[in-house]
Every structure is written in structure tokens, then in C-alpha cells.
Image 1 (tube, one colour):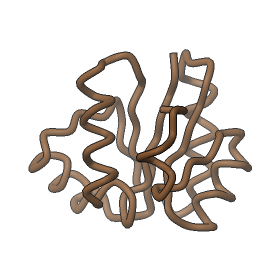
Image 2 (cartoon, helix red, strand yellow):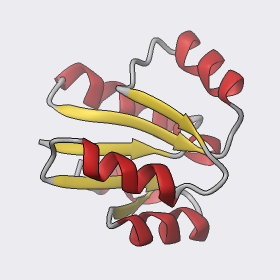
Image 3 (tube, one colour):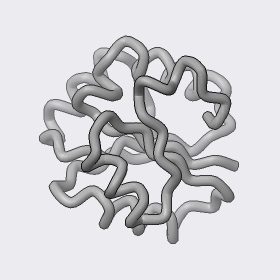
Image 4 (tube, one colour):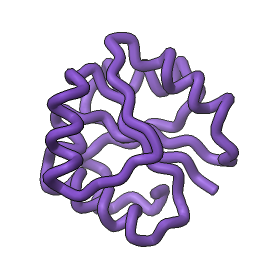
Length: 111
């Protein structure tokens, strides 16, 4: 099982990001999370409008902390964080997650 977490701003809120999230959600064979520094009400409004159902959504200024917690609490063998910035990449690496940039999504077979 894979655990996949998405950043929000510039990632999940893009057409590519939301399309990929929905495809993964339909397959139903992944743990899906949203880990972002965006305010919770903004994320909630978006995922409600888009009919997205993550296992958990987390708003945190320091992203590696919830990513690290999810890695210890989630029964998965692979952990992938999808983002769009150097900060996202650093957080994922510090937490021990593989990083995939949003621009690589259409051609990535990792998800």
C-alpha cells in the first residue's frame, strides 16, 4: 500500500493535481492525505466542492512534522509527497517521504 500526501496551494488546487487525486481516489488502493500550510477552512471548502475524500487533511506551518507522524501511524510501504516548491521537497525529505513535483505528475508512474 502507498500513502500519498498532496500539498494544497499550487498542487492540489491545480487541474493536474485535482485530476490525479480523483483518479487515485477512484482506484481506492491508496491512503490519501492533504498536508499543507494553507488554512483549514480554505482546504475544506475546496475538497467539499471537488468531492475529495482524503483520509486526513492537515494544516501545519511546518509540514515535515505531520508528514513524520503520518509515516509512523500509517500502514504503508511507500510514502510519496506531491508538492510544487523547494520547501515541499525539503519537508518530504526530512520526514522520510519520496518527493514528486506537480510538474512530473502526468508522466510519473510512482503514484
